[in-house]
Image 1 (tube, helix red, strand yellow):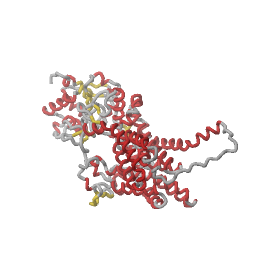
Image 2 (cartoon, helix red, strand yellow; image 1 turned 60 degrees about the horizontal axis):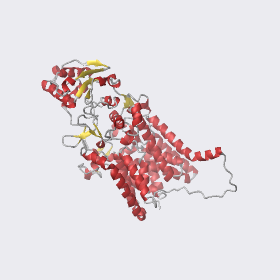
Image 3 (cartoon, helix red, strand yellow; image 1 turned 30 degrees about the vertical axis):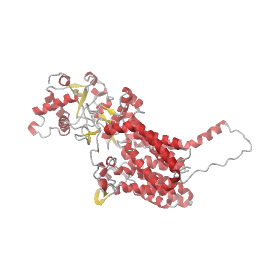
Image 4 (cartoon, one colour; image 1 turned 90 degrees about the vertical axis):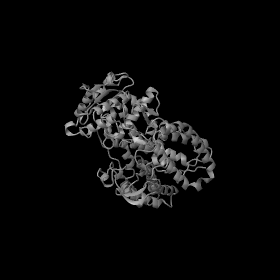
Length: 613
């Protein structure tokens, strides 16, 4: 017995005995075998073209262009792709890295490791660099999400390929998905999720207890290494649907529990060590840097056109704030979804399940307090009871991201509505089709904006750094790589294929109390150097001494260089470059060499073991 919540099942054709068993010509047989797959091929091709279109700005110059909206996260994900290649090339631990935050390292399971993407793409990263594989990750994630949704819809939900294609497009290229694609491809890559949902809702079929349990475990394992938060959100959505279907699936409860037991056993064995390492391994932490669980969805966002759509512009972010644009469907699509939910309520069991689930997640995503037009209204939201942030698991979740379930519901309702329109009168059908198309056009994605990143000096790209940096030493760029001022100098490590380690970096690690924080516990050199890079002067110094370090300051900076085991300090093209040169010259007591576009100081005389300091 199948427990899949579908309404339409294509009936099998009745077998008919031919009058004469005349074999079809070879060309005809080929055409017959090709025809069923042609809609799939066309669908995949169009999805790919849309993804190429919206990501086209990066491909104009993938090595030097970054997202204009979120360059920090893009550089971080390029670094992660290089980590995957480093892991394969050196057969090292994929869960931890010493290439950032030397000498403490980074717990990558406690960050967005995306090993499910970086490891398979490692050969391409080694050949072409992470700038190219980042673009592949981005394009493949968008097109793959759309096609996976289309595949599930076309096989298990609707008969119409057009309906399935539209549903897949709504999910794969939703405004919220495109928003995350600006630097966060792990939140725009969901091609595993439709299959997790499908297999989960089909548990309990006769003769498939073991097979479905194994398949679900493997899907969960893979999604875990793409995006854990999306896996958790998808699980919450499946749980709500399951509760709504309890009466329906009750006769199959033994087989369902059997499959879930197999899933839990296999996934538990495969993920036991990674999960332990995430919460207990080196450089693990508890909680997040800020009160993320208070980030609820603004109710106005649903009817607002997103920044990166045909109907949107950057000004909308000034109206309700620069929040994550996880919904931002616009008025026309919201109206179509509401009308579809109402009209399908009595006609489609699946539409009822989808509508109820969507409402649950709209409410859950509000967060601790209702917000409208960027302002809190003093009305408690469903998360008010957990606003302390100490509830396990929930304190790691952003309520606004629960609306990713609503995105999936929107795609499903569009597919169901388009399918049902085939059964109404011709005149009404045309008006219905037109309403759906008119609602979707304004939400179509535009080209994501990009910009040129500061140039990486030839000292790095040509490998000159190797002459200065023995094994076991670090390279210290100025500004110091961190989560704000020094994010562009993290690209030095990316372009060098992580062949040298760097101090500090862009990640989440433990603070002095073991709580999560952006980067390591900051050392004074990072603050002083990066302040000069931003403002052209040392923090707190008067005009007469704005670039004159004190003796205690010089001593502290030298101690930091020793702690980080720096071989070379360098300054590439950056704001207030000359001021940085003056600062380091006074600290180190000598002018830099100018080598391959960078100011360079060899400081092994200071940091080598046994050096006189």
